[in-house]
Image 1 (spheres, one colour):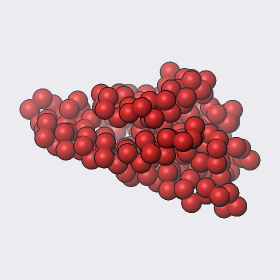
Image 2 (cartoon, rainbow, N blue to C red):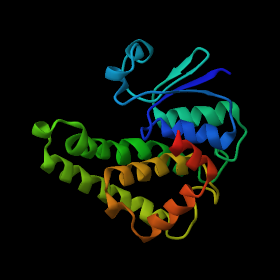
Image 3 (cartoon, rainbow, N blue to C red):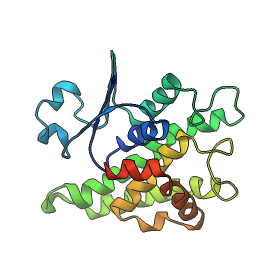
Image 4 (tube, helix red, strand yellow):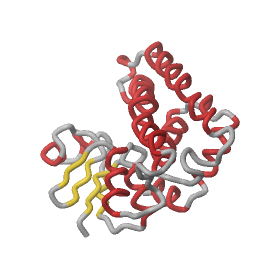
Length: 203
């Protein structure tokens, strides 16, 4: 077993965890309390950023969740979870992978921080509200994309859906119920019915 994933329940490490579950890969999962930089002894030596995920595969060390999912499908495929440059939707696929974190997860982390993680006296409701609106405005692209299709790319489930799906998972955890507009709600139900999602969410 060569792949080791450092994970916190509900964190972005769910993206590569879900990917490995979909692929049926062997892996070692190290589940830590959040935030691990304070609560898991020695984690800063493993990942100096102190963030999750961290994946180690032999000499490969990676810390960006969408990139790890892409690495897994590219290096451990072939798999229908991946697209290649010959696929019509390849550009959209790459765009969804990047958008999932940079555009959709990032503002939610600020909502989470300023509503739940900071001590009461350091919480800033206006920051949380502003970034919730930012997230919801950018989520309109997912509502539009799922209006006439079950999945985001090539008519099938891919890691684009895993990466965007985690942003929806986080929205539910943070309590941004406005995210689940009609198309997104149907899309989200399709994703959560997958056994690999259910196994990942439980770990």
